[in-house]
Amino acid sequence: MRRLPFPARPFARSSRRPRLTLAMTALAVLALGACGTEKTTVGGERTVRTEAVESRQPAPALAEIQERIERTCPPPGAPAGAPPSPAAAPHGTEAPADALVPTAPTAGPDVELSARDWCASNLHEERIADALLELADPTPAKVGAILNGLGYAGERVHGVKQSGATTQFFLDLREKGGRLCLKGTAAGRETVVDKCVAPATGPFTPGGGGR
Image (tube, rainbow, N blue to C red; front, top):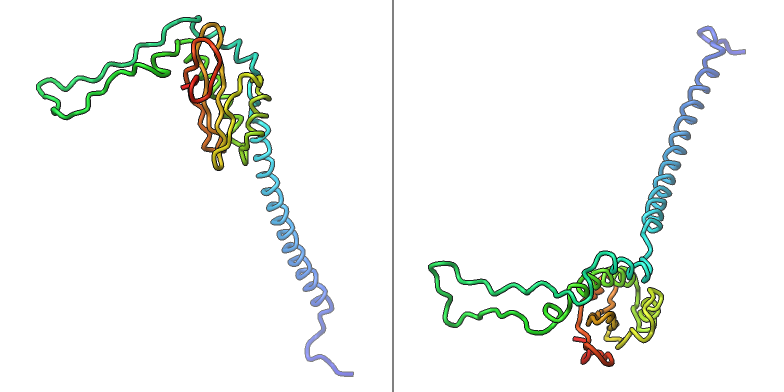
């Protein structure tokens, strides 16, 4: 039997093993904690995105829009504000002889739509644009379905046709003697909805009756 030169230390190896075990355990806890943090972060981001989507308010019903128009817009026939006059040349200066002099419009929404039409148009434009902004592949069928879903009856929707990757449409929104119509281009995030002028009476003709 071989003798050790120094007295044996029976607990030396056993005390080292727990320290090593504790160190490995701590590393494992940290690793698990990091994994848990990553999962929580990813999950948290998903929750935020989901809540953001869910928090988006649905478009107000057409009846609600009509109620707002009656409550907040001018009465039928109220004239729109007069368009601004062309700016005069500064005092002491003279405009060049070949300068283009701006003229006040004589036709179009600025002069042909009443104050009530302008007010109502803003409410309609916003809800329609919001409904079309997220529409992928805006085909005539999809655009028509969205407009119908917003409460605009088929007889008010006109000229729905595709042009490349976009779809054009008109809405006849005449009521109580007004001449309001809307013309729109559904193109995803580039969607545009704007005012146009419908005939005072008679049928609506896209491109002719609505300008």
